Length: 269
Image 1: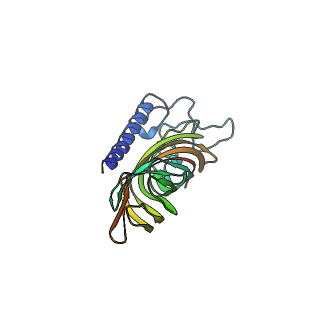
Image 2: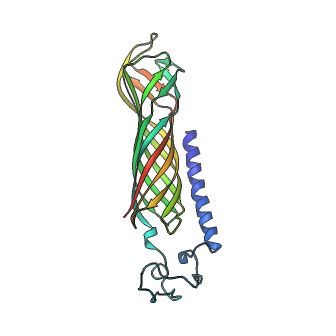
Image 3: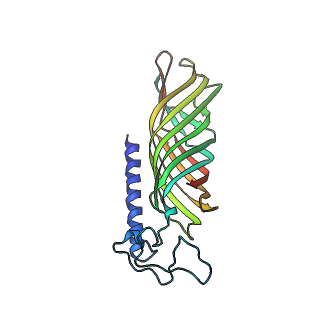
């Protein structure tokens, strides 16, 4: 619960900080946004409409009497729904068991794994967006101190609500971004003949729900007016999962942290 509150606070702060920075940048003349001002300010002398592409020598200049959001230079492509997907390797931090029938404290080490996710969301303007994400993060267990097993795997299925702040550069051709998400995850443990001399052997696949959160950052590069590709980093963490095997046998571990390096794709509808 503490982790979820931390990530919720971080996401809220991110939204407020980005909105403040966007307003300040606009107020200092950083870029012309008629939709931010009432009445609309006068544009720079060189300003031309972004909605039309007239022949050379016939450029249309700003019309002070135009309806805001129609002919005043507001880019409708800055808002609207989008889809994004990400895939790449994931490194799992070491953790410790909390239960194996009785309280435990045995170090658990993972092999490198895989992370992938898909999300659908909405851009409210060129700087702020929100989406709902479903993903998969999984890896094989390398070893657990004092335990033996034929195989063991740990997996998370994140279900997260994200807020993302973007700062387009070079007319949107390069888009650095940073974001945070909170929600939950389905934590899955799959093993075959996991045992230690002092306790029974467990086998099978079990799932449980945990709180989860993440932070992420990266940059995307424009392919065309609707598609961007890029690369990013994601830190994902969960609460402490505990699974119940036959005979009311409790098996659990501390929350698992992962560091993922992902190829990203974003498509705006």
